[in-house]
Length: 186
Image 1 (cartoon, helix red, strand yellow):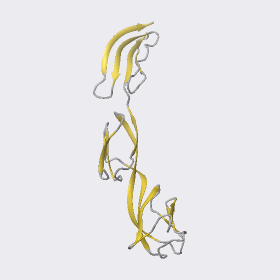
Image 2 (tube, one colour):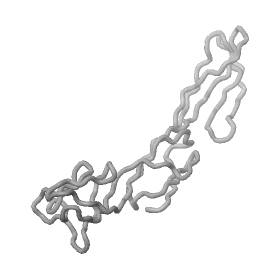
Image 3 (cartoon, rainbow, N blue to C red):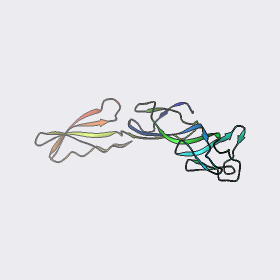
Image 4 (cartoon, helix red, strand yellow):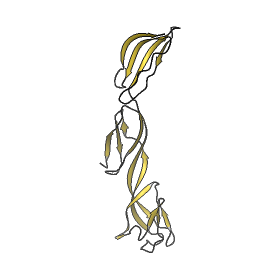
């Protein structure tokens, strides 16, 4: 929406939020360099779009008056140009990493993204898994992890020379479901 947004993540429960990339829009006043045709650096990196560039009532046109590349405004074209050392206003969009305002296992709340722009989330999530609790012939108890999967987790086989005491189904929501089995594998 361009304000504060809460986004429901696609895969839950989220275990760790690693990175959020958003598009921001910023308006700054730049001071033109000391000679005609110079290049002016923008204060941010990852700039991908010039929205507006003007000085007073004069609006400059991209690829006619200036061109934009590598986070710089290049004034080497034959069009109009601000006088050396004069100031002008520029509005641009750029990609940046931000922190979440807050998040839980299913939602992330962020602020400052441009309305209708792309938001990229990098996160890890937990998939359902079926584990076995087994006792080996030396009477040591252990856990044998199954293969996690989003839709159909696979339980492991009972290891040789052990007995399966229980099967633990973990969905990561609430307590795991424990089923007694009591089958031996010799």
